[in-house]
Length: 175
Image (cartoon, rainbow, N blue to C red):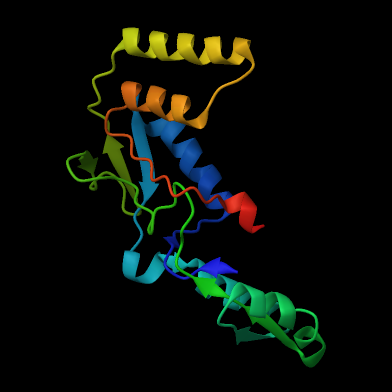
C-alpha cells in the first residue's frame, strides 16, 4: 500500500552528507542549501517507487482495487511470482502531495553553485517568542501530558506560516 499522489525527491546518503558539509563550511548563518533538481525528472511518486522495489525483489506487481484485496492476495500471489499492490490517494495527517525546497517569496541564490541552490533566510526571529515556546514545551513535558492540538497551537504561535493538515488519519496506522 502506498499513496499514488505523493511525490518526493531522493538523494543518496553521500549526497546528503556532502550537502550538509558544504552548507556548514560555505554557508552563511541561516542559509539552507538544496540540490537543484528538475521536478519533472526527479520528483518520484511513492507508488512508482513501490513498483520498482517489488520488481527489484523479483516479483511482478499486481495492482489491486482495495487494501482488503491486496491483503487477501498476499496469501497466494507471491507463490506465483506476483506481489499485490494497492495505491490510493494520500489521506494522512500532515502529508503534502509534493516536496519543495523553498516557497514563493523566499530569497534564493541560484548562481553561486552549479548544482546547488541556497535559500537566504531573511526571517526576522523574535527571541522572546522562542523563549516562550520553549517554556511552554518544557511545562508540558514536566506535566507529563499534552495534546497534539496544544503542540500545533504552540507551533502556530511561533511560526505563523506553519501549515498543518489534520485528517484524523496517521501513517503509523497504515503500517
